[in-house]
Image (cartoon, rainbow, N blue to C red; front, side, top):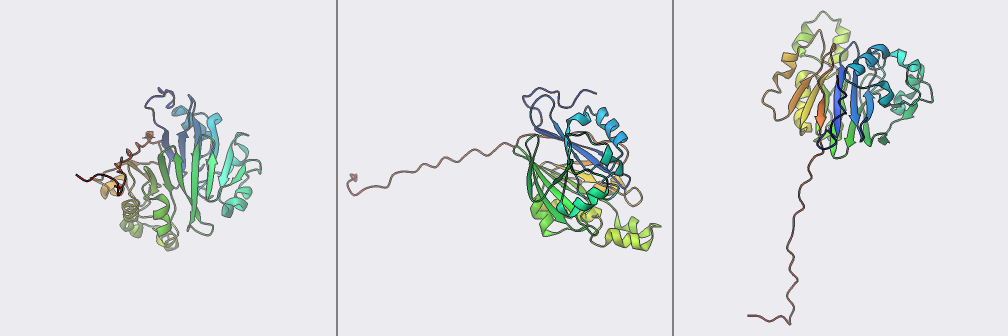
Length: 289
């Protein structure tokens, strides 16, 4: 497949997102950004094996040589495969929230790869990151607001419940990638143990389809919504997308087994400045007709 970045400079997207896989068996997304023929690639979570990740990246025309940064939302096994500690290119930095640093070291990441990601940061390829830590299990989960030029991307998974912090952090991004994990009816009727159901639905696990839709409604994304982390046992794409029918934004549903199409982001046109005709105040010596 031709490299997604080998387009004419004029009119090409300023950033592109592809979700390689999303679900309980592994999560990994790639964001292309920056200028030049071969733009910078940033991975968001590395829950797939290095071998599978490299294979999927190759299929969409991206090599690991271009991956300068990895952003980790948290370090559950489906978001951080333990094999990556010894398989990262030397130039690649792994950006983690301070709450996750100790666990990242236990997962095998070497100090030369690790970078603290708290509040704000600027990454290679003109990628600006703002991070917010929200509730998920014991250590929490990092939610990212990313900016490339005038384009904005929000990325939120495993957030458990809708909070004002979540809404305000991602308010009116152009592209919103957000989990739509389960259908409550399917979850309740499933054969899963009761403790697992409570963990998922108890406010520190995952968002349901309806919670996802409510969050999207409050965040008000401008262009595109990507539904992440659908449960294979307790959800279906047709159910997850039902509430979004007729919405003004485009919708992409991720899969555990195949990458999504590229979601393109372009520079947002800035409003024309208003011209105000300011007349000088009349003086006492001006003639009056």
